[in-house]
Length: 253
Length: 253
Image (cartoon, rainbow over all chains, first blue to last red; front, side, top):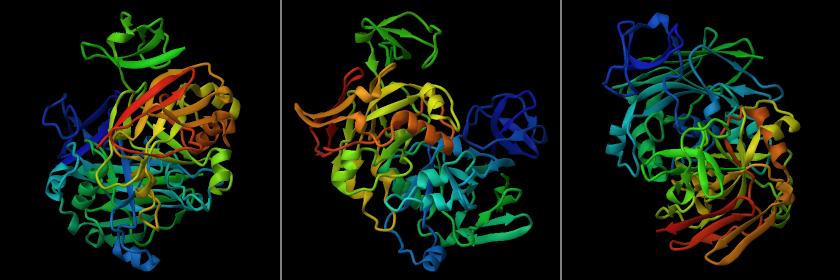
């Protein structure tokens, strides 16, 4: 099943299920209940498929990246939060703020929570996952390391538009079979298998739910692997995950 | 002016202005527009006075604490985010999660944003501040430092109930004249002057607004100074700022 959120020509925001090029409105993400007449998908501007209450990102969650960078395999998922105002959707223009130095794309698999969970077992966590989306976890690398005493994860990853998700949420996927690609222009710059994750999605959700209540619509980006590189104004960066789709943004100055 | 949010005996959530022990409902925080009949304040259960879209906390923002701990004075406010699910209000019971080790209270002044701002000058930032509230920025200290490669600010400060705000939002205060006290039981454990801040509220709002759009209801905790100490289940911890009020919570096991 494919969930999308979009704005109609009338300016209404609609969340619903996509079938055969048509968006069938539902009263909320994950709901069976209809909320109006179907709308042709090409008459809708796609928005971020959900507005997460919490937008969590993992660091150091791929064996290949850990090995290459000399990072230890963590005992617990290591994570930060991206602010609500960083949220952007497919086709967005994302500004590179003046004076921040290098900005990296990071293509990632994003978990979307479907049901509230707290202290969930791995089995319960699997049930709490609604589906998956693409994430571009943009990061201002020089900001992250600008203060020696305090790595500025929130600031480096929190600029407006730096949390790109979409184009849709796909349910029923086996994450172990997925790969994440990032194209810059037409050139493939990241291409890695999700099966290389240190903590898989069910494990991430289970462990994070020991720390805090996870709620419907929360998004957890699973971290990136090799190939995250700086981007410049004018470049189009597209995260691609087969079964979910393509998530393009254009970087602007 | 004093803004509060509460739940009436009928279960309705009301935001409004407090005058002479009566809550006058308004259609939203900062609005002049009435939203119903006045309610006696003692018939209302106070809630966190706002549900922030972003709950930001500063680290290392007091000269006295920086000196004592040997921290450099930062060039830019250093901050993290607390998740929405960490929010708690006056009188809450806050659970100390099993196995997390020491949990510290941190009494702080909280800025509440009144109007959207982006790239605000210090003068514009002053206008964007609606008022101030008390914050108890609870922190699981051992979690923060459990991984050598990655200080876990989000996790350490993100447990359910670890972001206590209230009891109200007071407008028109001069922050330079305020002090923050924390009582554990009847004993005063923190008592410091806000005038010792490295970055004052207008400067914080101005600088953060260069990084991200600040929106009405966003809360920024200004950091704590000396005297943050571990608490145990059974203890009542109360943050007190004259002109705002008392913000008590009970720690539970």
